[in-house]
Length: 450
Image (cartoon, rainbow, N blue to C red; front, top):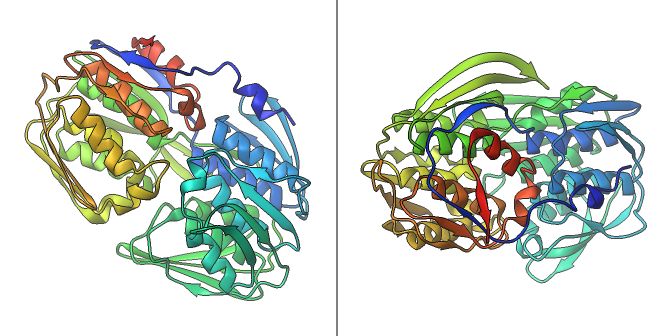
């Protein structure tokens, strides 16, 4: 396969500064969805036959997953930009540790998928990933019969010993996490019976949507905000050709820029509207954002819209905590948008942000404070006092802590703030949105080096 390392050599790194602009305009294809891209590679690597994936997100995180499934035994090849072929095979022990870089989704889903095979695999990652909790996945896998060894506190590196005779479990994750749920369901594909995952507050359901496309015996029952997923092990997976939909989380950055920069109007085409991923856009509409959603078909079982965004006068809102699972990755950019609103925006139920690439809750608060925004930070809350349409003072240096969403959020703030905003490094943006700088340049924004 194409070496992922070769594909990322020319990506921007170092500090960047954003200055106030107006009149952002243009139409962009929404970046391919990262969550769907990871799962497409994994399901294709598990399925018999050759699957073709188009529109794959070629970010560092996803490329790490591509390299891992190849090391586990799948045949993986790239035909062109976003076009990949994957031939599945029974997974075997890789010859070297699987380095997932910064990808929490990749490492946790791969642990679940590898658990069903008689293999031994070591999972590693960068310093940020190695600080994140893995016990939330390894503990339920242990209940299914998977043995593992890992660093103190359930951190990477982790050595996993899979088993072809997994036991099914009935499990309620203590923390709402699509990664944990998906890992258990992927392991359940090989369990001897029915594996059940119960969610009091449903998280993104891409695994549940994609699994039947590949032939898995998986069903979901929904009751209000809760959901119960059931997978019966043993159903053979078959190849499937899949086109990846646009990522609402990555589209959020251009959306935010258009909202806060005067005289702007942009369109993002092919944005996925999965209800478990669309909480930010519901919140923005409550804030008074000028958003127009035009249905534009479906890909990979996911409905799409073309999203037109115009500069808007925004007001602060109280974001309900039960919406958090549907927008957990978007709180950093929402906090930036809130800084341009009139009044106070209250965000609750954010404890999961403390276990992301960084302590994303504390880091989002620090980003705002560094640029003159008044905030109140709690254990799982963030309150932002909006500065109104004139924007926050700006002028700050954003410490990104190797977190891609903080880096992009800081740059977007600088496009509307009264003084330039600098982020300390942008290299990690390529983990989720390698086309970020090209896309923003196409809309009329320029980020200066240093």
